[in-house]
Length: 244
Image 1 (tube, helix red, strand yellow):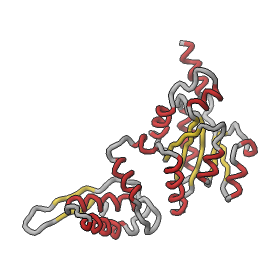
Image 2 (tube, rainbow, N blue to C red; image 1 turned 90 degrees about the vertical axis):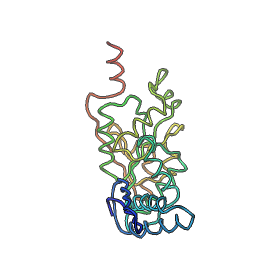
Image 3 (cartoon, rainbow, N blue to C red; image 1 turned 30 degrees about the horizontal axis):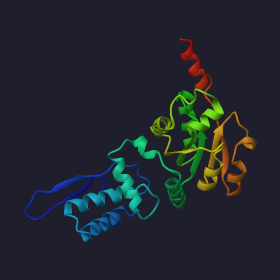
Image 4 (cartoon, rainbow, N blue to C red; image 1 turned 45 degrees about the vertical axis):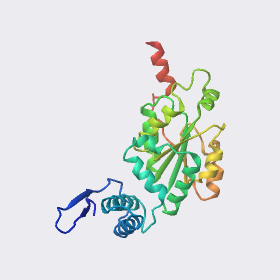
């Protein structure tokens, strides 16, 4: 069950394999998934120990889904990699892979949120903004402007942190489920591809000025404007640093 599995052979001491800690959404079918993975591994020539480990991995993935569901090879690979790589790095996803993942979330009935920005020097306002955005959805995708895009928007000397660094920092927040990047002037192409249920921008926008608002509304989605924490911005942070 939740604590893992035990392997017992006649005349030998029992071996206990701990479960993989995951966010549990629905335990329906977890046992069946574990047995199916066990049989698959044994049929492929794995040892009993290896088969049990695959069974635990597969059942750990399926409890993160709604109802009875299948587990794909890609999901098994991601679950295994996430045990050995930093959680933040695992969240950084290319668009093609992300689109497939978002499609899977939609099939599970999960509400997907989308927001975008430079997120150059992370500060308290960013953290509060993303926490509020996550409260409006089940999964939150953050799209980061590429370094070239940030320079176009903010001028020379920006970004302070390159795209890879910004992606890992944003991915390290519990409120963020996936991070991707875009090089276009706006994230419209990503919005068209991912079809989020909730499009989120800051309260300095109006719904009429949010890129992709009409598109999201066309498939029944909504636009939400998140409040900013007063007194916090990347520009002000850099000004304080320069003044010292």
